[in-house]
Length: 609
Image 1 (cartoon, rainbow, N blue to C red):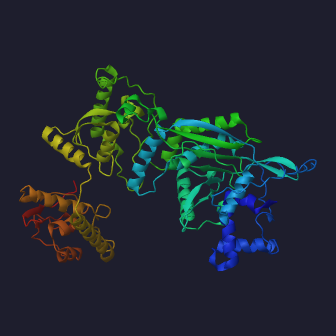
Image 2: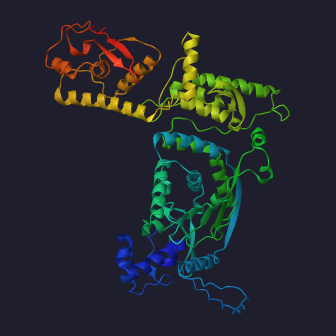
Image 3: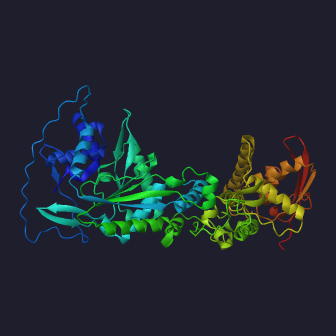
């Protein structure tokens, strides 16, 4: 049997506050809490007390040791508590009574003193953690998915490490005077959430994610987001607080370097992470020197554990495993990238091979010169092969893998990302950090537009395409009016195809559906042609989408197109064969925004060859 305080642990204060609210007005609490309190009061004959009311614990499973003692042990006699001498009132001091929810925090902390805990601490470099998170979020943002935090990645590493060190997930319990190690079947991962209150105070809640060891990373991200939403909006349920097996807290977000949090009853360990920063002795150095030397930011991580069931060597080995995972070993980031369907490879961790000196910027070093050449080779490879990683397939995320586009293929390492290299005018820069070079290349050649142009023999054409694309990263800065015009042309294209599909079911027509962007693209091309003084445009195209182009680009009337569907072919059509509607050509006129007129001729296509 467990008391309510043992079940809810650090969340008892919130639950008791909800219970008091329930007693005043049962309808004022959510239905799931109302049902829970009704059931508790029934079992306690209406005398519900959080310290004494007990409930049946969850049934044990095959993974837990038996809780039936072979021989009942005699309960130890309680030691008489020595009488405490009351401290005299301090003159001039103001005494504010602790009451309400705060008293539960006091009680929880007093109870935690009964646990014989010890703490292991490890300092972890976070270069890999920072770089791969940036790469992940850059892709998730483009896809419209929620971004991930450092807590996501650290928590995931902790859970993966628990699979190798499951004893860290166990907890200690005494039954009928006999001590037991309880082995939960799954990992219910508690997350400390700081929640602001209406009165300006803050409250720390520790709900948990159930069965986190059974999830992949994508499932965990959504479960984590759901838990945070529920906590911020007062929608946490009873089950969200129960049966936490291990938890994590992150005081590093407010600058705390290291922390030894209190361990609560019915939990074997609690993990705490500190702030991420450069080592203290390096924090006054300039950023350029830090980049040159390859100094990584670091983070402390502690494991505070119940020493009755967990030993120091095991805790230390567990943290070492977390260290290896966050450094990218054992395909930690590869599996995350696969779960999130990210087409890039994680940034590989490597030993820094930079040998430049600080006097001349390292320019005299042969290795540094090799790196400069490697950067130019990498840039050229993106211009030649970048389209292989372009995200062009609407039915899946990403095209796959291309080793030649990884900087490690060219002898560059993670430590080179913040170092500046000559880039030959890429994006308007003569020199730029490797990080910025890679970002610009990916945005230009590996986004939703793939460009293959390096095979062109005309140097002037090649240079124009390169400068135009790289200066805009293939993402033109469109005005509101231009966006509205594009939407208008898309609507025209879609509405036309939908009408033909409903009106002329079964008739052959070679629809444009799925490629409606052709219409706004042609419209934009004609507008720009006017800026360059173009007066005549002659076009040729296949059957697919020809009817839509005839109507929405050339200006052929709906009346003529619908008449052709009825079997009336116009024999005077421009170079028309008179056979079928999707072979016909036409002539028209496009008037640009600045009233320039461009004649357009779409040639007929009577041949299937």
